[in-house]
Length: 623
Ligand code: DMJ
Image (cartoon, rainbow, N blue to C red; front, side, top):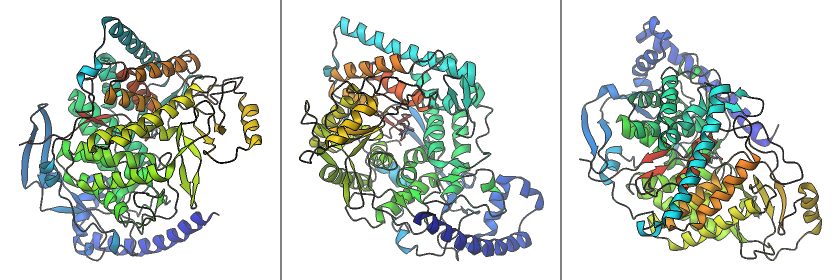
């Protein structure tokens, strides 16, 4: 058993005993004073009845956070987005907070994780202001009639690609989460709610595929998002389903989608009931609402998973008027902000939900860290700079990233290429992940928003590296990760030889060794090319995106859809029979937008969640 496992096992045992004793006490109180037995069969009623019964006990369990009940409205303010004329929602203030139940209770040291200056959501709304423009001046997007025709034909090619993949899903996997595009079977890794369908909704709307959109929403109308057979990932469910439903609602105005988002968002709320408010990684929606002391599978909190619920729950608060959705995610930010760090702005990958402290020293802008940093700047942009904490946290992180994690490599033909590595056990790790290729896009929007011109320079250089990684393989598609030699370090010839024999790479990858050659149809490089195109107006980003799309067409297309690859370099390129739902949500959407007019989903009006679901940004003067 690893150290971490032993630790969580011990913690688990301690938690279980505490919870068992507490449950007996709660159950007795509950049965004696309040509950009509019929209600036990009805999760929602059970929730509200029991919560009242626990009010007196709550003072003893100081770490309980609050959930505001929208039905207990005492004051509402209609808020209208005056510029886009979009209905924003009602902000509800209430004196009648309901305390949640079914929590993991811990009596550990929580003092330094409590949010001392609770930020009021109404205050946030009132402090929204205009931020500097992100997109380049319209004049920089000028095109000749020939250029326009070419761009439009490329956009049409991407749309046809989307339809090819979508039809495969419709014919062979309708209602399932994902299509397996070679065997034409399906998989259900996201609770079988139809992940591909929900992830694809807003892309269909943007591509003007309204019939396909309607067929999908007809199906989704009958999906029960309050139930789960097994434990679900809170992170994946939030970014794919909740984000997809919210964004499709904002684009289409279909109220059913907002209702589904609310059902799902609400059903996941108990997963935040850890001692600190840092959510559990997984949660069983059904068991989590029953009275018999359900405990989630307990494992250490993961930075990107805990920190990437912000946009979705803030948007849910905005659209429903239930401010406590925002409180939940703001508390997570506060806990992470206050936790001890050895380098300012560097947030380690694992955090204890019990103590609110980090438990290792690994820093990564790739897997397990990535979207936490992404959401700092995106939340700031989304709420029009209303909470300065997000600017501060983001700037600290980017300053440290630039200082410690960016290194020049030793690629012979491109000696100036910059690489983004990570940090572990006190040392720099010279390995770059495909996932980290979202960073150029993040830097570019941050640079414009916060007037940090150097960040744009870095963004442009890192995007070059990400594209170079694509351009250097035999397929023209970038690998999942690779290790590189840092400038000045001795080159180990054996390592180079290993790469050559392993991948039979005929192109020059000098300076790089050891690749994980998988390609999962990931979007990050295309995402950064799209954002840089919108930020600079430089058409070379469209050329690069087009090259990548051609490579995907060549290597990933199957008879029925598109498949990921097992290796992006080598004599035999093998497909992996998998098509992630994010191919529809992100990869194809970013490509389509790269070839659209710049005012289609403008970065000055929208902010993308990490799954590329566009959310309307808040604007000032709602009232
Ligand atoms: C997506 O699910 C999201 O972008 C997430 O933040 C990490 N990466 C995958 C796609 O690669």
